[in-house]
Length: 184
Image (cartoon, rainbow, N blue to C red):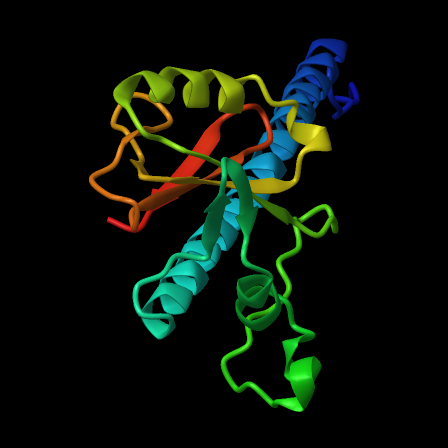
């Protein structure tokens, strides 16, 4: 009577290990891309929150935008930052504001800075805006950039807007893509 040994052949073992290795490799490659996508989604949500805060500021200040231009020196109104963006605004001037925003923080923990870059006065300004935004080094930036008299273009970063109360905000995402929102 012969005994029939049961077990796996070497080919079966190698095949199972190869399949397991491919699955591990796919997860190893896909996981960082998924994590980057989730971080960029949060950044885009934050940019939308920033735009909502800027619209609230504009509504509460007789249509004035939070972006200032004093003799081609561009800035963001500190009242906007303190009252609508920072979570520390409850103590400003001893007034307890109920509509304070939460402090904007990038998914990597860095607090966003805000900068009014320029006012687009003619269509040729758009090219310089597009190139300046596209040449920014993402990991060192963490800046929400605002352009007045601008809107988000279909194919590019910006296009000339229809008036000084129109603005677009941009953020360079991880991987170099640009997220844009505007108030029109």
